[in-house]
Amino acid sequence: MTTYLPELNISDLVHAVSAQDWSTIEEKIGIQQYERLGLDRALAIAADIYAQHGSLHGLKILDVGSNNGLISKVLSALGCHVVGIDNGDVDGQGLYSNLQSQINSSGFDFYQQDLANFIHLDKRSWDCILLLSVTHHWETGYAMSGRRRYSDDDIRRLMTELFRRTQRSIYYECPSDEPGFKPGFGIDFLMRYCEKIPKMRNIGRTVGPNGYPRDFFALDMG
Image (cartoon, rainbow, N blue to C red):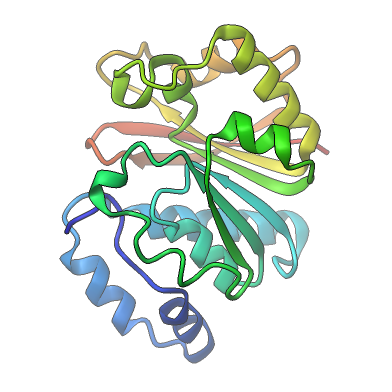
């Protein structure tokens, strides 16, 4: 079954990092058909964290909307302690079937849970939070379906709480020029729902699984 991101096991990633042998990963990325930038995103985040803070080891990261855990697992293999959460709305792709055997391994944990419920129950703070192509679903529901749409007040409360819980940076990816979203949607979203926007750095452009470009920012808390 093909998913939006290549299926990679933590053991594959740990071996690649420790042995500098990326052949297995290159093979798996080569056969997946949709989004080829998932690994690029993970390495861009890792490189930015290292450039800003000098180390990845032991950093606590929350990956919101973690999909099949690719980015979470890459950062775990590089020494971070990562929690991935996803509400399971796209589980028809079989995204989570292999995750249960990998949780609590190499610093990776996974919860199939809605963000609002997770934040309410889990009181931890995080060094970094990943919001990669997820916040626009809060307004429209997944894939503009209206399902699980948050109210405006819900979004304001979530953003306030996520800012409060982040010690270093939020990595924020959003539609750039995509049907249904006006140009500059990502910054407009922040202006509508955040009382104060942290310092923003442009990390670059990415491409979503639907082929449309997206903007990629770091929001620095310090």
